[in-house]
Image (cartoon, rainbow, N blue to C red):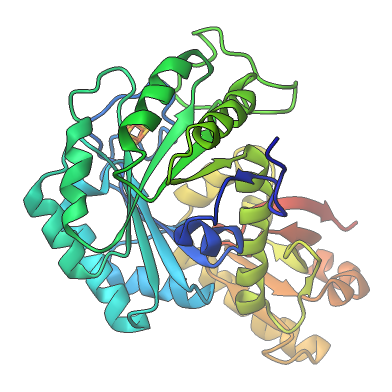
Length: 379
Ligand code: SF4
């Protein structure tokens, strides 16, 4: 019986190096493109990203390598995991990002990359290796073995080679065959607990896969299959390391640890940071751009330049009237609001309401989208 590790996942040998950084939240998640040659029925990619040539560094939409480096600095990253889509669909960009990250943060900045086998060839692998990629993870198709021999092409280089596949409960036989095939060709295999996604691509619900609970996205039977496969690899004494990455690890431990790192870097002097890295702060909203129904849509559609000018006038007046310094109250151009301490928001709420602003106490993620978990308007 294989027991759970401290990260709520299961492994037979040491965790792959890329995962060791990941579980501590030390890796930047670099989504290099939503373009992918495959159309997997379990694809977790959001509708906003899948099939679109968009780039994200963690939750931040980015345009170039400089933006990516900025986000890596903000979270004090020790490495990056390059994903998509299929990063090989945009091989020039992927190679450029690897090179620039290595140049900026040094050789020890650990980079791993996920790819389907569809675009793997000798040329692409050579380019990735020469750019400095440390670890490559293949995602083979379980419906056909046709492309599996391409995995061996990566053995030409002294990097870590791994396999990463979802644990589809109906694919026990295929997953065993994959294990048999790769056991002497790669250093590790990661089995991911399968999760349902709220997107167009994922057909798991329609195909009859149920979740483990009303509030869970994890698919029933997936984790059990993973544990069975670990047992199978051990009995066969396969040399590769096997890891079952649970939904709890991905959504709980890894994300929480990354958020904690980010909050250390983005918090303002007046923010209070809780044990999970969530920021508690005060905020002053313009009535037309206050959180509520359709908030994101309103924010996207707003004429921000004009509204920021208005807010700037408020900022100067508040600083003067309440004797607050430029450290104590700041303009947030992204959300078009003013930020200050919870204490000041509460203490001067009547004054703010009189000015026509809506004071609130907010709890939000320190991520680029500053996702609000709680907004309490003060009356
Ligand atoms: S799961 Fe990965 S390989 Fe499959 S369609 Fe989605 S992005 Fe492409």
